Length: 387
Image (cartoon, rainbow, N blue to C red; front, side, top):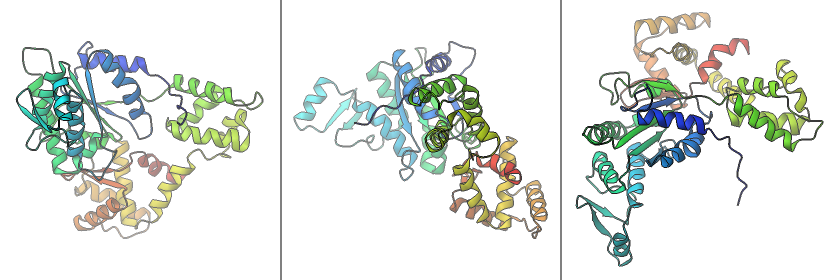
């Protein structure tokens, strides 16, 4: 068995979000809580280790599904599978006995025929129906947590699943009794997550996206203490240098650990971390930044220009409208600066976007919206002439 990796508890944040979900604060998340933060900044770790235990402590039933876990499976199947698994955990003593006796199907509350041999919901069962049954047999408010929820927009079934969850929310929260469902959606791209809330035809139109609080000074103190316990007294990290390094890597724990390993083990110069970073002797973004550069250099001038305009829209928190006249003007300006032919047009931009999608640099929702696959690339695009 591998040793347990030390994890900073974020109990106070979990308690605050739980209060918001419960309606105990001024924030209203009854329509859904949408949390956005870049990849590898600790969202999923927080959900599993802090928010889910806090939900259980309040007597709620958390149901977690990660749509990034297996991108080969339709998001709608992943969601229904998570709900089906939760239902399966509420087998009564009678149903367990029936299963042991070879009876594969029972009726839950005389309304849902459940087949123990299959992990999915029974054919024809709506998500609203299944969540209603789960609420009734558990006697608890359900908190459905959909991690990397933007992937639901990759398929028509996924989009339909989002509308089904909205219907379940309206049904379970619409009576005179206590609410039966809370929905929590997280995403590694605000632009992608926004496709669930910004337009009137989107399932959660009107809900707002909340920036997920990134790890801060308490995490830096936690990590500094952990590392210094393992290092020699002459090879110790300085807290201020550590905080500076954490900011440089975009507050990503994994990237910080790689950097610290190189400095303390590879170079044996933990105490000089800040100086190494400030003088450029240590490339804090070598991995991810070089990946961006390599991908960018393989593109045609038009593809590069389209990507740059998308990056500018991302940093400006503006929607990217690929075939708008202003977009064509901005793309042509980039091409002229690169001394390339200014040939932005609907067919040319469409072809460029298709190539960018194939290279997994750009993401397209089922209904046609585009966004950067990794929003962090916008920062690199903005700074690339200075790197």
